[in-house]
Image (tube, rainbow over all chains, first blue to last red):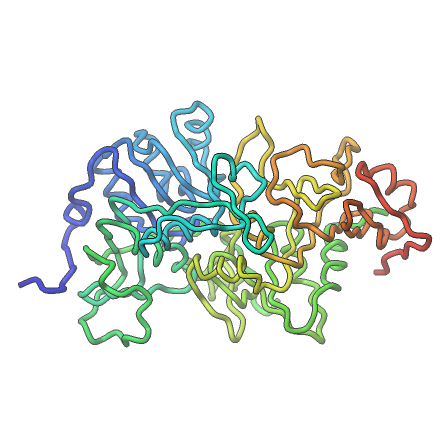
Length: 235
Length: 218
């Protein structure tokens, strides 16, 4: 009996069932809190024609940027994509479709997708290129546009700690999009720094309940820093 | 003399009030944090999920799991809180942030703002800017008054794709502090040594100039 045990023991097993043309929702902000080993596994598998939903697309040789050289991404839905030369090249040549989405709208699209809400109205983007082709409606005298929810065939997230049941705890700003992404995948895969026994996490401190998590794997992480800014001690 | 980047930040900081929750955009707005008056407390919101953003870490404090919206490593102040991106934008969209400071390419007399996209050039994305301008009531835009070629950025109509419509009420440039109301720019203050003629010349949209325009003091 596996019961609620979500633990898998290889990255191959963690991403089993991912096939060409699927949609993947990924947690992370910049390179912070990205599921770096799950992304590396997608690169290894060579799955193609993927639609990626993620706030950013990594950098040239790390994070989701790893999926660019072999042209594995067909389309990306993101709020900011500026840190990547290969990305720029594929976007400009039209090989890569980019759907720019305001950051808060993107977070809410994932949240709504995971919560069974098909669409929501927001003031964000009214009167801008984002509003083109979308329904508009007034509430209390203000204009809003209708934004549709997003769900994925897979969601890939990174957490700090988990118990074997898939209850997740995130660390500091590595939380970002991960909790919403976790709710919005048909199959949600979480990779974590440490797996503990059920009961060891205080139920009050759990950020993502295990019901959202289908597969769980413990990994080791490089945690690359994108902008290393420091001050001299005492400054 | 036109204001320096730091002077712009210094002037914006005078708009801060005790107990304000503030979101500072990337660039000049970030510098505002350096000029918070000693006798007030403000808390900085970083839209990637942090309220109570502190200064850059020392080498010993450096933590890959703690960054700001510009992806720079930061620290947390006492009493900080961490939350996910949906919660962060609930704060922003729900109008809970007291002051937002951000940069722009253009603003116009109707309070429209263009800040994220120049057609034909590389498009990097709007990040959280569209949510911030749509959600906040109290926004200060910081930018240079005109381009290097002397083209006004304070226009009758924005020429670039908009980030937000009818949402900007205050603009601080290197030359002037301007309020937007009733479809016009209103000159509130001028930079030290900058003449009214200079400001009028570099403001393409209709500008109302009161009889007395105080000079900013530094």
